[in-house]
Image (cartoon, one colour):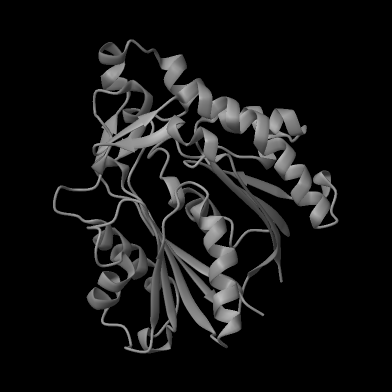
Length: 305
């Protein structure tokens, strides 16, 4: 049985304070703390590439486990902001880590829903090929594409990476998943000519309308009542999005935490960073849900062994 054994992550130490940008963007403390819920965003250094973030997350994973590089049979990198178009980032990470030539590597081009998609795809890939240890790495540094003068994006997105060990000695095991796409709305969150554009109101409305129904479907598919799920980890698009989804589902906020005040929305790394802090706690069932660019969403139920 394959599942999540451990998670390491890397968040750059440099920060940009949103309080220092209040005059620039015409915002106040209430907007920062209660609406977007991002006090500061993390920022990679100019000489850090996507693959470097991946390596640092992997190194943190290594400090948490007795993982040997020669035991890693597959690596997948989830990103839409790679070092370059060719080759795939996972191959570059493979080289930087000096992994075995027999280690399979591929990328998945997805954003905020990418970690949940990767869990399903990668575990199926490993199971089909008799593999016991593999790594899901998420790294999507939006500082590469964010316009620092764009209020809709500059205040929200932070840089980070996470490395999730999938193994045959797991702590959390995936149950059934749900997936969805609203491709007709893809232009609401899009990168044109190297610059990110987001229609914040449209993305909020999409999440508020779509995600509660998807979580109910997830519970139905897994034959579990909503109130029997111990913890709900939603993509941290903003504080108000998380609270709106929880309210529509009738979930108390203590079961649907918002935690990214100090580094921002880290896209595909958001959920594994949240999960890393829950791996050694007591929640027996955890619902995870990623949503955003695409417009795309994916949800999964995790159970503790």
